[in-house]
Length: 221
View (cartoon, rainbow, N blue to C red):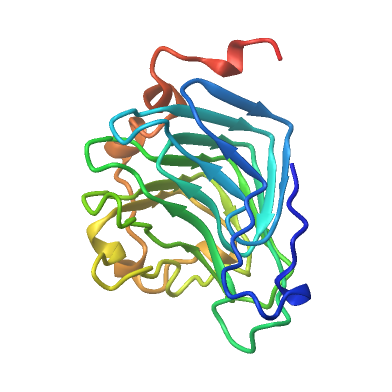
């Protein structure tokens, strides 16, 4: 799934969203897929605010720069590869953000990224791991993201991996956490900037807990 729109080819356009795939609906599985784009590459969404639709991504690849995995679905990314792209239109960091969840406040589970890999073709520390998206259509959203057992490359800003999309909704008030991540982008130098799950909390941060009675990894593709 690809959207090859390039902002460099259209300097007169300021709105540079270019979605490659918009996934709606409950029990949506994706295996061995590639999602290629720049801003807002992969939109993981629900059919309604009160619907906690579940999506499962296994052995997938997604690349982009600004918020290239975003939306309010309950989405499990397992054994996936996320790659941040270089940018020639910006002179300084940050170049962008990998995840921008907009989880409904009533939904106990947003994104789970597990046993995955985040690499970059940009300079070291030029990308944030995530920022919360609280849309104007749902100001009660509480974005949720757990990244666990995942390798974070040097492209991720290890000192301050999270930032705000709006100062009205600071990331510290959302539900961001990590557990047993590795790699240069996972180094904990400022502990308050990298909330960590406890062992007990990590025991419930699993694909089984997030997806409940749906087990797509057991289904034939």
